[in-house]
Length: 251
Image (tube, rainbow, N blue to C red; front, side, top):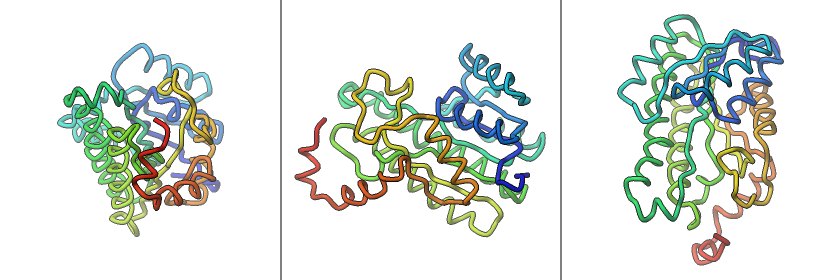
């Protein structure tokens, strides 16, 4: 269960090598989180991530998890919850893709959509059902401002995040009153390994700043968190911008 300050004692990160996921885990471990599961494709990077968190004093285990292998999600995650209650699930996996390549290669675009949306629906519903059965917990979903108003420059990625965002909001409504809290996190451009080599967008942020916003949102039991907060105003304007204007935005 969470302590008096809203800190979960146990954490499951879906996307165990995610920079934001690991930054969040580090921050929560510093606030008393003690049991952590990192779920991801087996790799040296996943084991290194687990080792780095163990050095902070947490009991950390790795779990084989592939967002694209939706047939395995229910069995894998249900078994994990059967071992004991999990206070917080952070859905942190996703791929950016390569817009030009993916436009020309439909199967590559499908893989982006399946990872960011289908994989999240499968694993998110499985975890939500488990959290509802135990009667408490938080499901934190990493969305993106890219899904708020899809741009020409990244409409494949943006459309997948738009679907994820809508799904997470609906799931939060479905779980209202069950003791399960769903929080949607909408970062802007985050400087991580995934965005290396790309020109930072205005109001770019860091994984650590997103982690801080997640922790603050958990304490407040927020339903939506923008990172940085100023993006809420920016995206409110862009949401109503005419399409001819949106087409002229820089690629």
